[in-house]
Image (cartoon, rainbow, N blue to C red; front, side, top):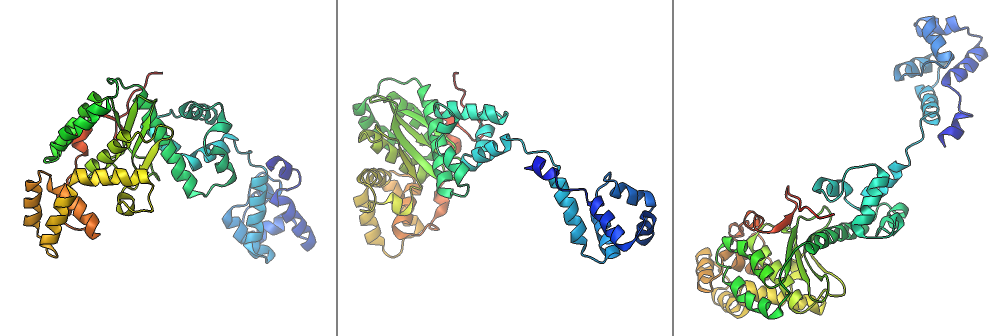
Length: 377
């Protein structure tokens, strides 16, 4: 486009010459009117110098026209003679518009390189045959303002990273019987925040690959359950909310997916497991209702919570909540989390929703939060 325009868009100096001739002005006349050296006028007329904003204002006054006339002439000339954009600009645009590529580079998932090499890396990352097969990328070239596509693409990138890491984890063969039994061991950890430290080891002993990968921008993923094959289940989590109740609720939710053998044909990606999505509403798929119910029962026995809230209604004093948590051998944050959900009061006793990320990361296979899981090439 630039090369074509350059053939017929002249330098502004030629238009100024035409205006001078129409008025019968010589070069020295224009210099006198402008109050500048004749050499400066000559540089413009000969096309050796462009028109600055200050000169556009002066020329506009001299010829009694809008300064924008000369400024636009200069702009059109500059664009027409500008270097054509590197084709890789469009490639990088489509990449970044679809996937959070800069974030993926920052995380060490792919390396910073030229556009062609970045495309090759994405092809390998998503295990496809070529650039045109990268999921959602063709869509991005056609429509660049689709937030839903961005969210799905970010979720997919996160999922593939979990898969990459899980494939390199060595654990014993999966045992459903061991995982069911492990629920008792996990339940015994619910009284203190430090209990989360033991989760990776307990799941690994059952043959479940447990991976923590920090969420990507635009992807509000909490967890995922899928299988490498019929005998190798994987649980991935983001720790999107660094709170004790969210950790145990999401974990138990994903464990139930494994026990029900969900995610064998297609990964079950759980996003925004809160509010309605954490309920047993008929609007949710049966698999999600089952997993939500299991998570709620695990965090706080439903019958006991029903009884407690019925007896204390409508005044739920902090001391009563803490005492109830002690009786049922749960951390108060788990009770508060379930009560917040039931009352739709997410400002209630929030100080008990303690942080656990710093406790679970050291003993886990974790990618993100400033660390990268090395992968074998």
